Image (cartoon, rainbow, N blue to C red; front, side, top):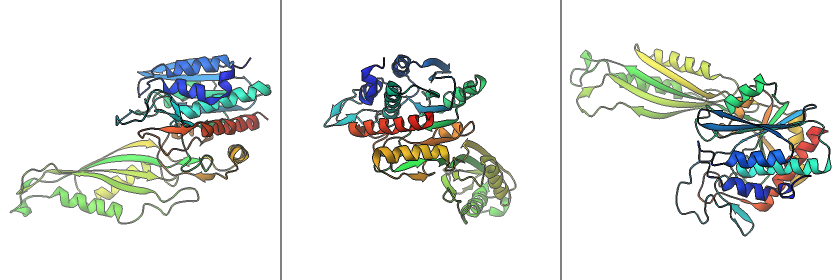
Length: 377
């Protein structure tokens, strides 16, 4: 017997919003979700890594395996001028307000409702799972990455994963993310010889060397883009010398940059390129890099078509297949299985008065139900 309240995404979305789960806190949100999933027949496994609560749940043992991935943690409330309690789950004039309404407790509730609607009418023939983390808005160290490792060890890797991030810029259904650019941050320090500005021949100005290196890095585009990605973007985010003295040539100069890159590169290769370029202008230097995620793309095919057709069937909207924007936990999932992202309109995510129209939330549940039905066929 399917609990009636789970057929509608609104009650569960409200219950989740009422949990104060500002990352890394859980606030009881995953317990709320676990109870809902267990009432539908899911087997729930709680996975805690460090200070982070995560959840894996599955129903079914055979057939094609569809996984829904998302996060219950939210960003801080921020400004205090909310028109409603950020953790109240209030509905006013047909709109649900609260932190996480669109990013992404609303999508989690919509997927649960989509499953409930499906199994209330149709026997389950395949497998459905949830990969839910409390670390997406945080460092993303003890969340999806660790759960995926557990899933691999326990033979739980799905055939396809759908991430419920708010992907739509204007109206529900207008965009599906089938890939993301990679991201790498780098720290550059160029060393010189300190000296008096009146005697530059006795010094070696590291600022001059650093400026020439940065000019070489930015004088031409990193690449011209590809079939699915726009050109990679290198942005200098900081230059720092920390020199309070007007007549002193400093001993070192620092810069920081970020590159958002397409599938023509790897983070490791870009770090090597920056290191080689800086080496053309400096004899003594350091370049350190951290790769936040590699680029990936799930090219159109049967699985993406299922999602696309479900969107068109429920909304009449033809979605754009896109790879822009920032990073998400899909960058980790792409290392294990094909993945795409689709969720609510993200216009208010992370903002004051984050909200989603209730009708839109219910339409999303219909879309997810269509995906589930087609995947089970």
